[in-house]
Length: 191
Image (tube, rainbow, N blue to C red; front, side, top):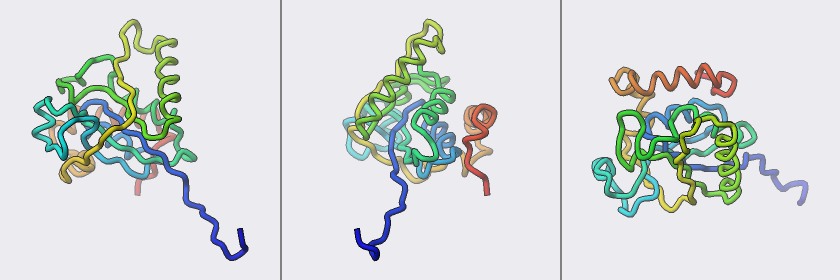
C-alpha cells in the first residue's frame, strides 16, 4: 500500500433472507433495527420466474414471502438479528402465521454467506435446548438462498407508508410494540 492509496473504510455488509409470514411484518421490524441498511420484501426459493404477488398468494409457485436484509455486522450481529426475527414470528406453525395460511407464509432462513448456515443451525439448537417453544418443534427451514425476486414497489416499506391500514393496525403494530419493548437498545434513531 502506498501513502496516496485511499483506505477503504466502507463496512463489510452481510445479507440474509428471512421468511416469517407476511413480508410486511418482517420488513417493518428489520427496518427498525440499528445496523440494517436495507430490507427488501420479495419472494424467495420458488420455481416461477418474476412471480407476481397474486401468483405467490396462490401458493403454487414454491416461493415464500421473504425479506432480504443487508446489515452491518459491526453494528448488529446476526445473533441479535435472529433474536428479533424469532420474537416477531412463530417458527412452530407449518405454512402459517396467524390468519395467513399457505406455503408462502412458511418460516425460513435463506443464507448467502456460508458461515451463516452454521450460526443459524447453532442458534436453532440453542432454542430447542432451552425449550423456548416447549415441546413444539421448530419448523423453520434453513437453506442457501437459491432465488429472490423483489416484490412489487407498493409492497416496499408498506407499514411505514400505510400505518392506518387495517392489517397494519391489527397485525404489524402489536409486533412493532413488542419489538420496541424487548429491543429498545437495538432500534435505529428516528429522525
